[in-house]
Length: 391
Ligand SMILES: *Cc1c(COP(=O)(O)O)cnc(C)c1O
Image 1 (cartoon, rainbow, N blue to C red):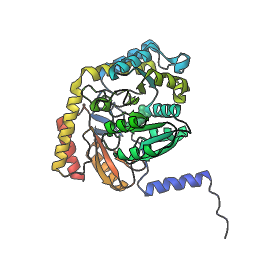
Image 2: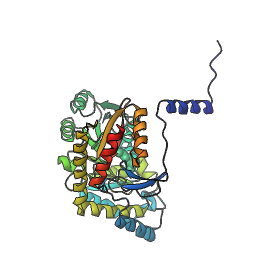
Image 3: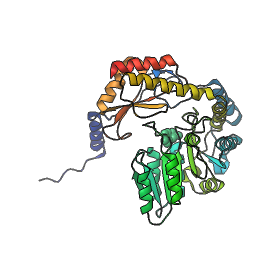
Image 4: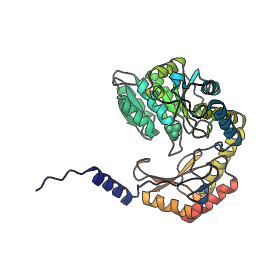
């Protein structure tokens, strides 16, 4: 038999794309022309949208847009350098101080994205001698960060604090970082943070919470899942949050002790070797933070919409997942079925994307519905009617 011919780039990439198409896993993009509000124009169609992470409707908020414009007039567009050279402006500094005050933590450090914040924290804190324990459903950036750090990575059963506890009891030597999403991005459920904090403390491990979807949304004051569970900086030494979701802006932060933040400034490569966020972005985020603090009605309205959606969906027997948060996935199963439903909703001018593996485990493709304070009660009714028709 002849040796198999080694495949070149073109052959192997084409084969990969073909396989993805056949399996219903091919990803495409639609082109939007408006801010991410309740109504958006996308691929030329006006749709009622239920898939952005702009949970409080702040991305298009006039006061936030005005702060961005004024920030650009004062500071220019680009920051011109990394934070450690000359890119760290008064706007960044003020945002860090205001976030620390809001969150009740010693200090905050801004990062350019949440992905980079997670890479920076875990690679700065952990090395080959250490162990990172992560929930199996953690965000990809937390998993990638642990891999990049060279630490031993163990993934524990989702939502079962007894599993990391058993694993902690078995790890011999080295420091342990226990890292979890606060609010799981594709399932909408909350981590059992009080139990994880207790387990971490018993074993001298640090608990890190990625609260990308919780900050602004959870807790009476919008401080996130740690406020919701009443956990402090001693119990959860590392808190990460993003500015691109409920804040409606862009960027991310890590909040914790003086020692943590100073260590990150010295060691986090995704902080050191990258251009600082545009200062105008920081100015916009400062105004978002004011609105998060001063307008609790946004959260109250949002949580009312969640309750209304869940009771309507229960009456229709829709396959809801067990979430009490603005992330309300409908479990479908097979990728092609999820795409069919997403397309049928599109025909009804409703935008909800089909979430498929590898973003979620095989066999658990879903429609990830997200609610926003920008929605109205009648938007939720329209959504329920459409879902009933396409199920
Ligand atoms: C969105 C998200 C991130 C990444 O944040 P970006 O600022 O978009 O890079 C990290 N973790 C979780 C849980 C997220 O949902």
